[in-house]
Length: 201
Length: 63
Image (cartoon, rainbow over all chains, first blue to last red; front, side):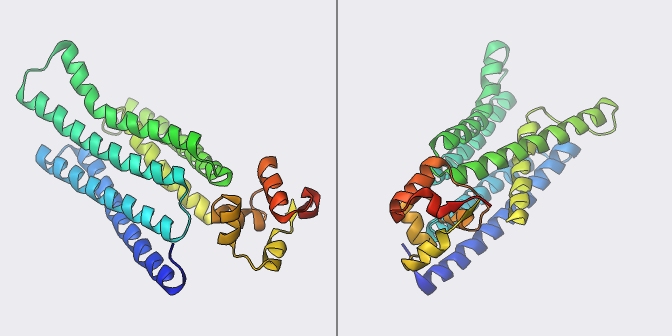
């Protein structure tokens, strides 16, 4: 446990790092979305940006854990949740590269193609599972209520964006996006929910 | 709901973090209850009452 000036210093340091890595990661995510929509850059550039983004997200996750520790804001469940999130992120990126490599270099067809295509999804499924486990494990009722509220706001945000985008897409006003982008939008909704909660105090 | 948590805590010279540690909740929870942003569940209200050795109604009152 850290007290006094050292605690404030540590809070400032890890808070600053969290902001830096978080903002850089949001920029990376925005860039990835532009890449998906325009489909302009070669695969290796999209791959590179994905790897950079995961490294930034891991750094942001680590900074958040340290910040919560120095502020005594970390519950056991929230620490476990962050660690699981970082693990599934690595699994997700490894899965994407694995599937891309197989589809690019081998003639994967039939049932095997479905299995290989499912590999990148495992990371995302792990992510969803980690969220569920967190809600079950969180013993602090106020934090659990806040997080549940955040997840509900993110769900509403995702439904609105995906519905509107879906109709735009229906009439060829916007490019097609893969269905799994719904989850990306949900994650962006978490950011919106955090802002909403921050404004309300 | 109003509560006297802040006063009771100050009387014992406890910080929010001290109280949070004793109740096994986060500091944000203590802050949210003290400022009236969050009404605790009955089990947590009983834990608070037990800690201060007072009946619940002496700590929490209707608005």
